[in-house]
Length: 93
Image 1: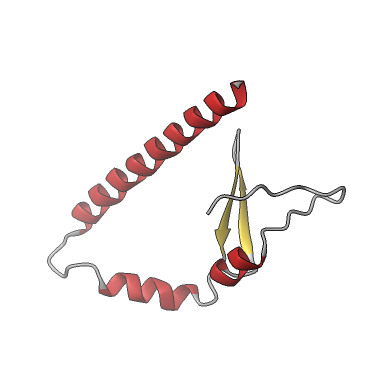
Image 2 (image 1 turned 30 degrees about the vertical axis):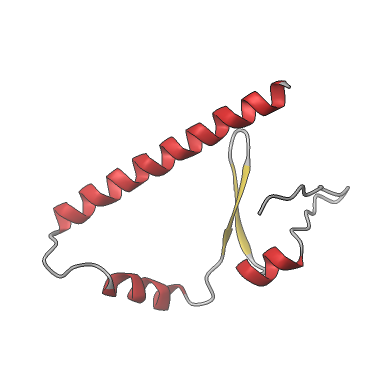
């Protein structure tokens, strides 16, 4: 889903009903050098964390979890970098 959102004179951005229905109405706003990222605020973060914890195999050690977290963070950062590169190409047109 890709939409264009416009910021009004008071700094408000409307994301649209479909997005709000799907993701909620409360977001963390992360301002990056070339983009703004909206992260939905969980209604029950402890419950979500507990559910995620149930998915972790019991035989993993803390060092294994740290390594997996680092690898995922690198993947996410590289994905963000690629997205920024694409945005630069688009803005040059």
